[in-house]
Image 1: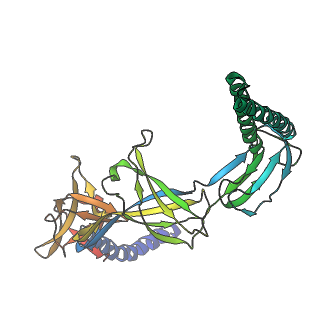
Image 2: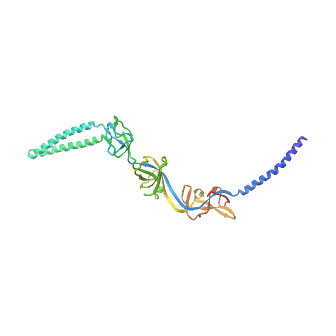
Length: 354
């Protein structure tokens, strides 16, 4: 009896559950029916201006950045500058021991004095008609030979003094008094950044677009508050075979802020169209024949339908694409999101992005 009561209660509960589930199932079927159209996002084809820019990394350079070394070996007897000191052209930077050269110079001076004395005597004898022509020429030759030796030795003495080749700032001092100097041992680093060059290497595909006088904008990633509007002054006449690039350069005079070897970011406008057909780049797809196409929206019997249209892309930049006129018209809508899940003639539901 108890068992029959349990069965009866179970059947009675089922009678209430089944009707309650039926509306939910019907609702789900209706949603599937309504959801047969694909949900996409649209954007409008625009007739507007389009700009394409080349962005490359550049470098700040200067010709007046040198490591000064001694032209002759010897003991450094003095270093006369300090780091950060501004020096003029010709300022003595350091001196190398030239005691031996000085001694040799003094010896040559003594010999020259005697040779000149002998030349005077020979000339006097020659005027009297007593001396021979050979002895006179020999005395002249001796004087000239000693003068040449003294000139050569004077040049060597000059190499014992290291002078600034241009006006600049002593960036670093490497040598100290008592150290041996030589062509391979730097004494100081001298830098003049008053005039610097900004250089960059650009892909050869842009060679026709970049000329002398082309405008460019320069910024410095590690020096964010400096931006400059400059023009290309020099375009290279050589393509680097290793990376297929050519070199451009512009000069900044009276520089007060930039340092050699700073990184620069260069932006050059290589294409500008005042009025062209522009669409979002993400709307463009590629078919199996490598043709570019988009889906435009048509209305058929009150329904929105996606239609495939082949296009020709002229250039892309920062999420926008300039396309050849004629394929689509300004004001038309193109699919920008959800295009990969639809086909030609697919019914769509839209959510306009702009």
